[in-house]
Length: 164
Image (tube, rainbow, N blue to C red; front, side):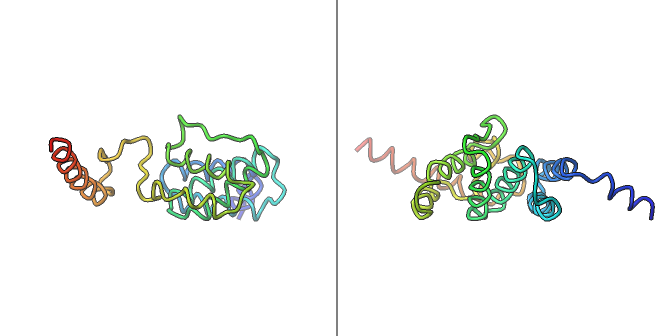
C-alpha cells in the first residue's frame, strides 16, 4: 500500500515521459504511444518542452506502427506548440524525418496535398539507420526476401536495355 502511494507521489510528467521514451527506444512502439496518451490524460497542461517531447514520441511511435495519419496528427500538434521544431536526423530514421518535413511544409495546405507525397516510402519499409536490403533483424526477413528478387530482376532488364 505504501509502495503504491510512494509510486504515485513520485510520478511526474518528466518521469512518465522518460518511460515513454525508453519504451520507444526499446522498440515497444505501441507501449510508448500508450504511455504518451496516459501522460496527456494525467497532465493536460504540460509545459511547452514536455508537450513537444510527448508529441514527438507519439508521432515517431505511430509512424513506426504504420499509422501515418496518427503520426501526422501528432506532428501537427507538435508544430502547433513549436512551429520551428525539426527532428534530429542523427537520431531519427531518414524516412521519418522526410515525413515530418512534408507535414511541416504542408501544414498550411489541405491534408490531401501532404498525403499525396507520403506514398514515396511505405511505413513498413523503414528500418532505422539501416540501408534497405541489409536487414539485420530476423523480423524483416520477409521484406528482405521480397526486396532481393526485385532488386536483381529490375537490374537485369535495365542492363539488357542499355546494352541493346
